[in-house]
Length: 299
Image (cartoon, rainbow, N blue to C red):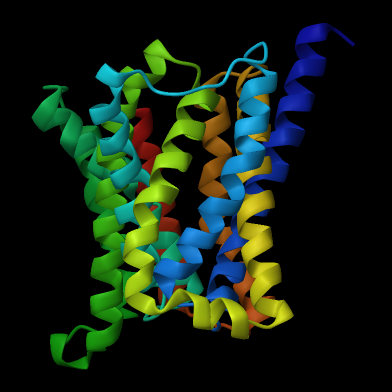
């Protein structure tokens, strides 16, 4: 077997592991939210995920501590706020009001917002094909949120509210991605992620005090803590390392294709572990979103 073929198989194995872990993570978030308030849950996740990521970063950086230079601090703070702090405040709060499947579908439309921001900020052309893909994806989101109901009066206000929170989080991730493009050109991706995780965790701490975090931490059951540990060590620290190991062996465009599987996998996992119903509207809405995202990103 040639080295190229072996690298491809290794990369696919790493990526599939990452995608499966990320898909199951949605279930653990839902379980974690039963015992921890949203901001407290996010804070615990990143406080615990940061040390192993920092260790991995130091090991791959010849033992040097990765830290932002003073002139980089404003940009890294922007990344931390958009990619961690505000993103997870909105995302975890939104997940209280919608199903796990809905959350997975809505939050994954961030490439649409990236395309829009790239047009506005970077002056990148949209084109008919990309515009069609965007409309298709938003139609899929609308189908998932409405569950096929045509009348606005039939929509659940709480579901609409939760969906808007998650859409706002998805928009913030697009901002993070646009700003992060320039940073990644100057620093290795793992180093950038580690710094952002650390700053994001620090910025989450003051917000978490709005929820009386210590009371929830002391009262949480083993189910709650398993959820936190899964999110921190498997879904955050381990998978980010696996993701960058895979990207060292395969093109990023090929790697991104497997991310389209996440909403479908979440739908299946949420059905089997949480008993969530797979409705026709959710299934076909998910397909529309995936097809729309594929058209948008391949245009």
